[in-house]
Length: 305
RNA sequence: GGUGCCAUAGCUCAGUAGGUAGAGCAACGGACUGAAAAUCCGUGUGUCCUUGGUUCGAUUCCGAGUGGCACCA
Image (cartoon, rainbow, N blue to C red):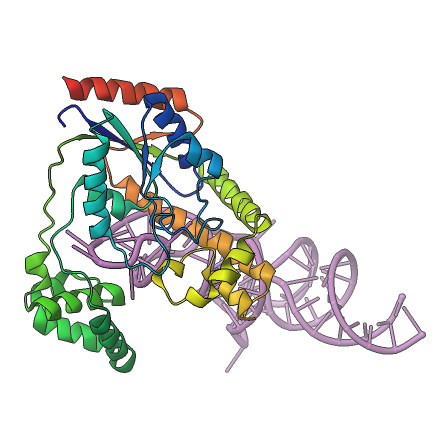
């Protein structure tokens, strides 16, 4: 796989990644692996800006609509499955395109993640109850005892992080810090990273226009149909949770739509914060396909030598 | 037309017994290892509507104007 390359197209939501990646994949006559942690779910099409049927038939996509909202899934499984899929695809293609905005999932494929146990649902439930009962401070105190090293560096105000560490300690009998080695694995293929972005104002305009399009396209019906699954992680997602609040009668529809726009803007900012720290990322406007292609070609050339 | 109330950050509003002001949300920045479209942290960005008066000093008190809301005609 020495001369095989994975070209990653990422960037904030609504920047135009999907159309761009299809064009790029067609140029190389290859296929696309999605790195979008919400487009995995086939029941969530409108709210996740799922590729259209035309787009899906233009280029073969993988990891799009491959799961049901009821499926258990996580980054580690994704890493394994994508590496397998890449092994297969590189048998047919020199270049494969990966497209999506889920930074953690992209990192898992590019660098790998440590060998940690999957979460045990009943243990997590117990810990959540304990958190609700005793408060975050008590959970941090517990971590101070079970894994003082990680307790030093953990975000002590972030319940998810604290609970996850406790979970791993309790499940394995080892400290989270001893398992969390943060080693970067070498992959048997080259990686070229492209970030797509737009001036902030324009990106926000596109986000707002896209939310209006989703509503016109039936997002409310989609959310209504998913209401019975609202407790699942997959539905803890921008666009759905705000509409659930409307369906509960807590806010007006108008307010829900405004909230979706706000949540999406904030999500885009968090994505940018994540991607900005990646110094290898080459940034382009989604309109500059030619410029990006030129960059890709020269990067490929360089990797071959 | 009359009377009353209101006018402070992008929005909703607090406040200053006269010494140029602060919350929430937004916005902006950051963190991120099996929840990641998740979760969490940090930052106040301002002709205090305009204008005249009183005062050493007015966003604050008084008058007028403008705009908004309510009630009465």
